[in-house]
Amino acid sequence: MGPVLDLAGIHEPLSERASIFMLRAALLFPLLCLALLSTPFAARAAMEIQVVGGAASQIAIAIVPFQAAPGQPTPALTDIVANDLDRSGQFKRVDTAGAPQAVQPAQVDYASWRSRGAEAVVIGQVLPAAGGRFEVRFYLLDAVRRTQLAALSYVIGPGQWRATAHQIADIIHEKLTGAPGAFSSRIAYVQKQGNRYELRVADADGYSPRIVVRSVEPVISPRFSPDGKRLAYVSFEDRKPIVYVQSLADGSRRKVAAFKGSNSAPAWAPDGKRLAVVLTRDEASQIYLINADGSNPVRLTRGGNLDTEPVFSPDGQSIYFTSDRGGSAQIYRMPATGGEARRVSFSGGYNVSPAISPNGRHLAYISRDEGRFRVTLLEIETGQTRVLTDTARDESPSFAPNGLAVLYATVAGNRGVLGTVTLDGRTRARLSESGVDAREPAWGP
Amino acid sequence: MNKILWPVLLVLTLSACSSTGDKPAAVESRTAQPTTTTGSSAGTTGTADAGVSGSTLPSAQATDPRKDPASPLYQRSVYFDFDKFDVKDQYRPMLEAHANYLKANSNARVILQGNTDERGSREYNLALGQKRAEAVRRVLNVMGVSDAQMEAISFGEEKLRNAGTTEDAHAENRRTDVVYGDE
Image 1 (cartoon, each protein chain N blue to C red):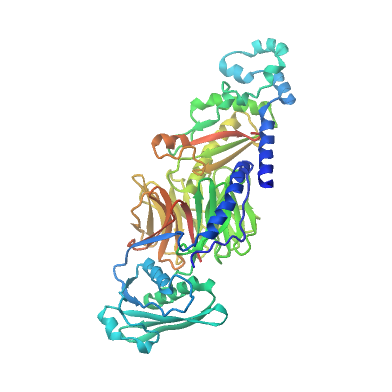
Image 2: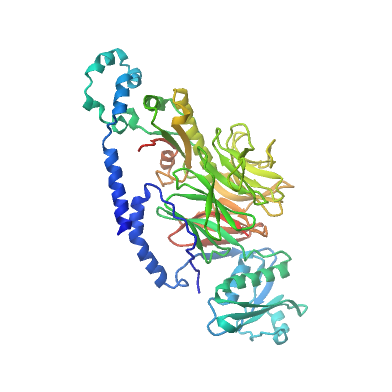
């Protein structure tokens, strides 16, 4: 069972000039539907993921393929778990070929695993359960101390297969590294094909994409609400940029900022009740605070500079943003109520698109150096920076919910692709889909 | 079939509406305010027009000058240098023509659409494009056009006219377009 396309709750706004496109779409859409239904999704590459690199120090883990139940979904749970753990860069996988199957801790030959270099072993089994469901049991074992670190059982329907694998990967990550995994989280991104734009929400590994907005005009800047239930975004469907907030449960949405001029750059306050947005209703692009229902805009920045890309600190007390008030594009911080701003980016002439880590200690942003736009990490307290990528057209960085990696957009092979990179810059994953331009990613809960 | 029929009808209707430009009200106002626009910038004076006003043929006023390639109103784009948003002098005559049209037609509306090349952050480029739209709006404002007739918006890098990566391609994208609301 591959990625499932869920078409519930889609918005397809039309512009006047969409009449011609609708004509083409009306002809093509039945063909496309037919193609989608008849092609098995597992064979159709959704997101292709390539991982390179790894942390300086990795935990050697043996993931023994689980005993399978007849008719269980594909791929194997351990394949999904292994891919998740690979993306974290924290694990070195021990070869399990030729090893005896074990489904209970008592069956595990620890000496054999130790001789293969394993520090931890994962075993498990899938059993058929009533009503077409499955019981998944797994154990995480410390191969050195020969103890059980986790033992869990789940009863699931086939639709929860991948989610279960991600949960298992999260538990393994947390038990062995001490930090929670982010494998059960989601990402939002925009996909462009010709003149068609789709705002999609997918699993953190790019699978199971769901279209939440379909449009013939651009969509940019999707942002998950703190509770993950809503998505703010900017749509050009009315021939100018307007900020929407949409419910992910039922697809209902409202215009949150549609003032005269341009409306953009939504950023959620940690309480989920307000957003910072950029409006041009007074003069140049300025940052305002607005309620999530669009009421009561309050201007925060002054001076008529170019101020944009606001993002709240996790404690809600500050807003980081991009401004040209000093003569070049740099990142500043001001109180969330507005007021004096202090510059936080100091090297280079173009630093934009701030993203703040969940613990508030790191800023990820894009810096331009000799024409190359690259994801850069700033440790706020020390001021130390580190360039995380070696690509040249990076955009739109955001942190994983566990703060251990940054998701961003870049260009590879002449098309837009998504990437993740760990904070040490050593482990990189590329998520791409052939024939498709992906951009504007945002990592959500 | 309905999905095809209605869009086709809509397209036919829209194209029928825009093919002729005769709007009796506009014709009258042009006669009432003869060519202070092109008159002043081209060097020909109003005195010649004062004599012409009585004998101007109605058919000559029937074409929308905005659609006449020879008219400065046909020119719609102001181009900008990299990272810049100042309106260069070479665009002033064209903007004067639009200003005069707008002052003569108080129901006319323009949208000033700012654009950038595709390098850099999308939101930052949205704001930079906005600066380019605002710069043109301010010029028109100083020329006497009322704010009620103008809206400055930005497409940032989202509506590239040229998707290439050469400097010439980038230059073509750094612009503000003057778009009339009835087009």
